[in-house]
Amino acid sequence: MHRFFTAPENITDDKVILRGTDVPHIRTVLRLKRGDRIQVLDGRGNCYTVNLTTVGRNRIESTIFLKEDASNCESPLKICLGQGIVKGTGFDGIVRKSVELGIDKVVPVSASRCISKLSQQDAAKKIDRWSRIAREASKQCGRSRVPDIGPKSTTVKDFCFVNRESDLKLIFWEEELSLRIKDLLHNNQLNSVAILIGPEGGFSSKEVEVSRKYGFQSVSLGPRLLRTDTAPLAAISILQNRWGDL
Image (tube, rainbow, N blue to C red; front, top):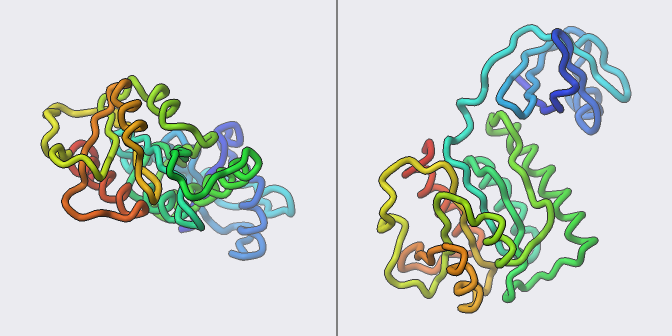
């Protein structure tokens, strides 16, 4: 069954309204009509199975057939990924796969060795694109909420400051030779993790030192050098397996 997201204010006791880009997709691409059934999520863990009643050009109205709790598809571990900006469309795939793995938030990080530099205008367009990718990935993999993207690109220092209260804080660095995730002494359940993954050129030693001032630990992902679009997926998978729901 096709799934869509809508804001909670578009849901009343017995009616759900859809607006925006979902309307032409339902109307002209899927060619759904009055009487057809879809599922709508409110981003708060609720899933509504609804019957379409009005398929208009600007809005779609429906009546609620069934309300279910869909929060069990969200990981108990809230992972915030600070990802170094990569060239081309590489960031698209990182967002898409991270959403599938249960990420809570993705923040683009403008590190000193980033090949691609985003202006304020470019960053706004890119974040809007990555937000749409996160939304579509959430639909595809059956999540009950759409992870946050951004809201803007940030520096390593600012990312570390904002996430300084996370239960676990990690910066993955190719020059770290001894410490890995399995060596961390956290046997109890964690609620939140903040991780930093560098761009193609990795992090500078200065950026690693800055992160340590905010309680981040530098860790290795093993003896092989991983691409920047592979490293976050490996890190998220390991964390989800140990403290999450994989």
